[in-house]
Length: 547
Image 1 (cartoon, rainbow, N blue to C red):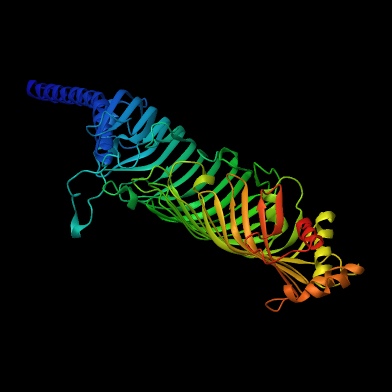
Image 2: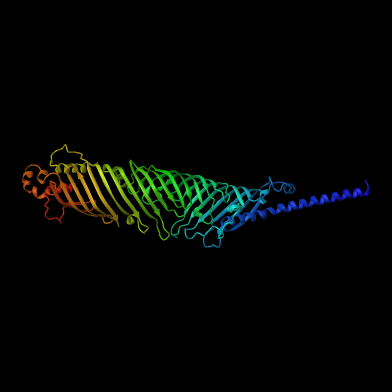
């Protein structure tokens, strides 16, 4: 080999060695730069996505055992890095007076190194563990989106997202909704497991979630689609899906108890969610009475997920054997301390036994049919529900029979006397009817009309009942088909014949002006002292009093 050729080979070898050395040095430097670059990109993504400040305590990048040269030559493709971070806080820009939007004890994600330089960047999987999500009261929630209009791409469409996350796993996390009233406890939702798929900025995320509801406490399983997130108007963010709500304890609410099970579907936006579903409470009861009456409903409601306002349109339900329909709204306005309730309830053909069993201790004292139509209003004022409750409606009870023999015997006696057959024992187990038009306000029920009827006799009253003071004051008439003398037996029947004309009025054999005063436990029946011209025979007054 001549001298020139040897020098040429030595030069090539030196150049090759230097080139390889440079490649190794460059690859090593590139590998060392992945960690700060990934850290920068992770923080930048969170800042831009939520227009927020991001604090990151620690971040580690774990690379597989691969030569730096191979990493460089393949541009990072087929090399997946595991990125782990701890103690992350995402805060509303410029807001240190409210809790962070998100707190995360630990998060990790997998990313192919080659995709770090792609547009958009793709992240295979993100796992969030021990996350806390804090939602301030409405009116105190900072704007989450940037002030300037989002940049547009070709044909005026939004630019492609900078990062596409293919899967997100949320574990052992908590969603807390902070109330406006400082004395109230926050609503806490335990998020056991939430899975999100394809979370690009302009792409809806598929989700699957398991969580514990705050109030009433119960377990929720739900799946569907959520997003894309609208940072400028969060309430316009779309969502759809279905849910199962199990083992919800209604006992946390005042006055009621039972375990609720519900299933349904929903769709819309966060500020207008249309929900269709059904719910059952096999052991529904009022705490004061304690009697179980099964409750089931089918409902269509419109929910504002940003403030909890709910419109019922309508709800159909069955309480025991009684069907009813409810429509209306439960709303809280910005200036209100409490929610207001406004409902219209219609019960076309109910079972009075179901209602009495639900509302009173012990067994029902009456059976029959009831139709009811009423408006229920609970204004957003302080005080108990009983103090605030407003009712305005009417009812009609038909085919009623008292189940306690003593009361039914008195009703049968009234019917016999009213028909002028006081000794006819075949008049037995007669059916009663009752109807009324009522208004409740300030714990005072005003009956514009209240009527009670059995074959041969009828009572028509008007008056008030004070719920707080347990005081009643009713005035009206007792009308009988029979004349006064015909209500008696023996010699009394003949003695009273001369006074029959004085009591036969307005087409009735006997018309008496009566009053019912006293308390619900000790009512006093008698003649209306404001109608002195009516003299009620003592025996007849006793009969009406027994009733």
